[in-house]
Length: 136
Image 1 (cartoon, rainbow, N blue to C red):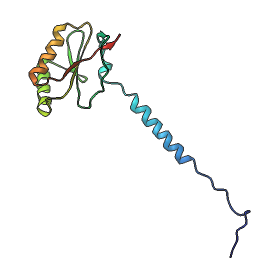
Image 2: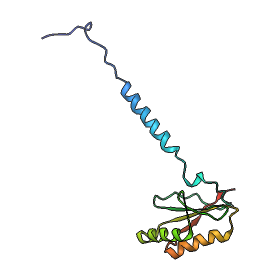
Image 3: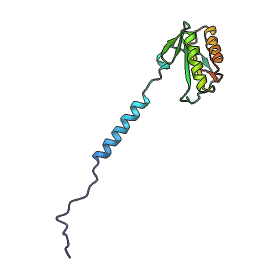
Image 4: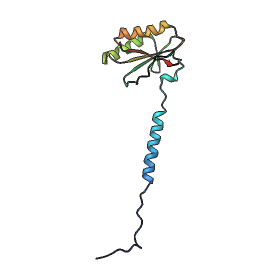
């Protein structure tokens, strides 16, 4: 029987370099994924204030329509005239009529413009509407 003496053995050590690499990559991933800015928030839209508003979770299939101060309508980041908005919403309603629609109207926009967007949603067949506000 062969017995090893303690002089010839190396100390076993855990190699930390791969673990540090993985943790570093995870850190980068989470930093990048949490710093994406919502496209809607990049627009210069000041929402009206409300005390009783809720902050619901955003759904993945949610449609967000922005109404600018001057009445221009944006679906996502692209500006649309009323007729094109109707066609796009009709397409969405054909896929799922319960698709949630959130309207972000500038606080100084005419009420008429926001109501026109709500009417367009209704004519397209979408009835799950919400108005976004800021907290006081």
